[in-house]
Picture (cartoon, rainbow, N blue to C red):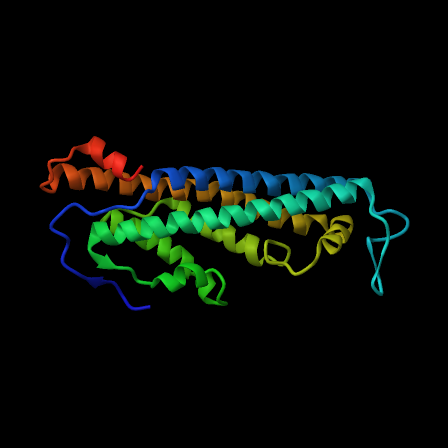
Length: 241
C-alpha cells in the first residue's frame, strides 16, 4: 500500500484494455441490481401492509418452519433473483475496474497505489473495505485525468454503498430470508432504509462508471492525436471500445 511510484512514460501510445463495452455491461448490471432491490422494497411494504399471519413468523423456533404464504414465497423468489443479479453485477464491476485501473497505469506511467490483490480483497477485508475500493476508483480517475476534480457521484456512491452494506439490514446482514420476512412484519422501515441505500448506490455507481470511462476515452484520444502517433481519434475510440 505504498504511494504512487512515478516511472518514465512510454514513448509509444499505450496499449489500452477495452473499457467501453465493459462499462456498458456494468451500467446495465447496476441498473438491474437497483431494480431488484427496489422490487424487494415493494414486497416488504406488501408484507407489512398484509400483516403477519396468526400462525406467527415463518421461523417458529426450535428448527420448525410453518408453510409460507404466497406473498412470502414471492419474497423468497425476489430475494434469490436479487442475489444473483448482485453477484453478476459484482463480477462485471470488478472486471471493468481492473481494465480502467490498468489503463490508468498506462496513461499516467505510475504504478497503482494498491496491487492487484487489493482489487479483490479490498472489498472483503474488514476496515480496509471502508476505503480501499473507493481509493482504487479515485486513483483510476486521477491518473487518467490529472488535475481534474473527482466526480461528485464517487462520494455519493461510496457513502450509499457503505450504508447499504453495513446498515445492519443491508447487503451484508446475516439473517436468512425468513428472518427478514419477520422483520418486514415488525420493523419494515429499517429494511426500507437499507434498500433505499442500495438502490441509490446502484444509480450513483452508473454515474461513476460513466465518468471514469469517459476520461479514459478522452485522454486516450488526446494521446494518440497529440502524442506523436499517426493514428487519429477514431482509432483511439476503437482501441478502447
